[in-house]
Image 1 (tube, rainbow, N blue to C red):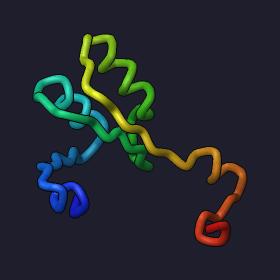
Image 2: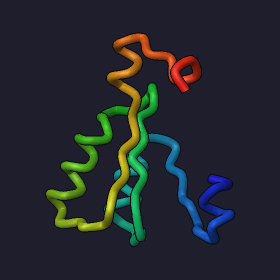
Image 3: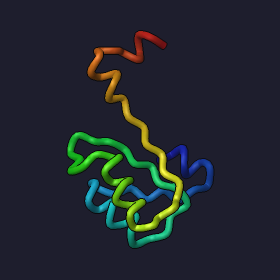
Image 4: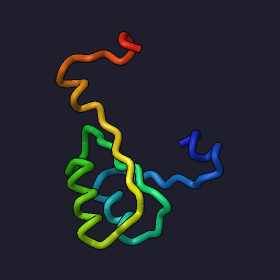
Length: 79
């Protein structure tokens, strides 16, 4: 959040996936960051598919480490 504010953006953080999806469908954003948290009802790709079906064309960023966690890769040790 600090990074975005430092770049003079106004980030909007949703408490969970459902409220984030609702906000994305009812508000106007320049870009979306679809994270993946442990309490996510649906994954970021499912949310993105729902947004695209609603004809939303805002750019979306999805960052995950799913493959790394499954393989046991420790980024701190490989950096």
